[in-house]
Image (cartoon, rainbow, N blue to C red; front, side, top):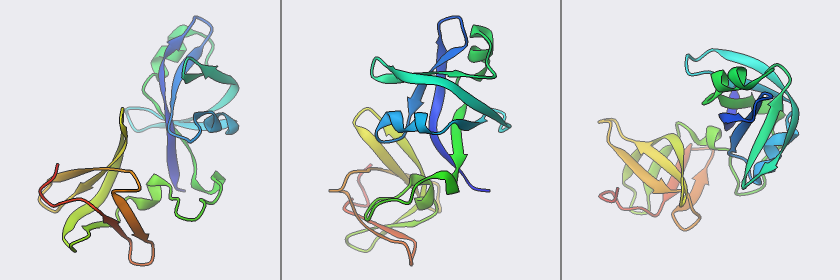
Length: 168
């Protein structure tokens, strides 16, 4: 079964088991459409939880999970990744891709130089960043914006980027 990370639980919100949530979906409220979440704890263990309530709050989200009775239980889950099954996601629109689907793709620039493979993505204040790691372990952090991500060839498993080899 393939899991896709759609967000992360944050600090408790109040004393009744609510939690702050960082959503990786666009728009962020789309995360609230999934009633069952698989939480991946720091240990790697996965536990299933059901959303009882959720709402936008100050530019983020807050949720109440059914199995979380109070603040201490919410605090114990802080930092857990929120995952859903890949087959629960709607198909992406043309020229849209789920990040998890691009992991492992080769990354080449417009000059044909290989920068590595897609290791993961980082959500930074200026937007998402694609991290390409080469065989020596060097990382290239590439802004995941249309002007830099030029083309995805799913058949060849290649992401073509407008990014110089020596830019980090």
